[in-house]
Image (cartoon, rainbow, N blue to C red; front, side):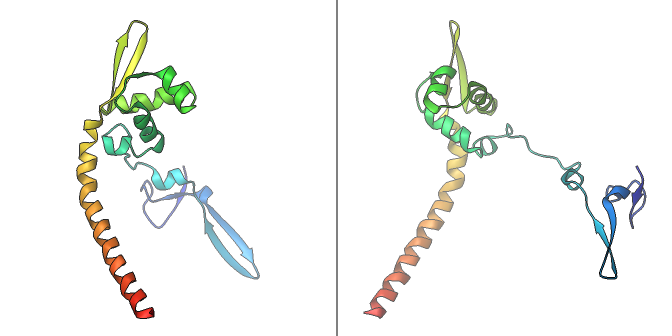
Length: 154
C-alpha cells in the first residue's frame, strides 16, 4: 500500500494515499485527510466483555437478564417468555454471564436450568458503596444550600 506521510514508510501513523484529497474552493487549495475508523483503532487491544463481572453487566440487557433470573432457576424458554426476547439473544447473554461466573447451568433431563450467582456481584457493590456515600453527601449539601436560599427569599 502506498502511503503519504511525514513519518517513515511502514510506520503505523502513515496514511494510505487514498485518504488524501485535494479540493479547490474559491481560489484556495485544501488538502482533506479522510480515513476509516478502523485505521484509528487498528491494533488497539480491547478487553472482552467476558473478562470480568464489571464488563459483563455493563450491557443493560444482561442486567435485565440477571434481574429476571433473581434467586430462581429458569430455562431459556421461560426467560424468552418472561423477557420477550428472541431465544438466540437470551442464549448469547446467558453464555457471557456464565463465562464470568455470574450464572451457572444445570442439566435436568433434556432441560438446562440457569441460576444467577448474585454473590459474584460483590466486587461491583464494594466499588459502588463509596460512590454512593459521595452522592448522598453531595445531595445533603445541596439540600442545605436550597434551604438557605428559601429562607433568604422569605
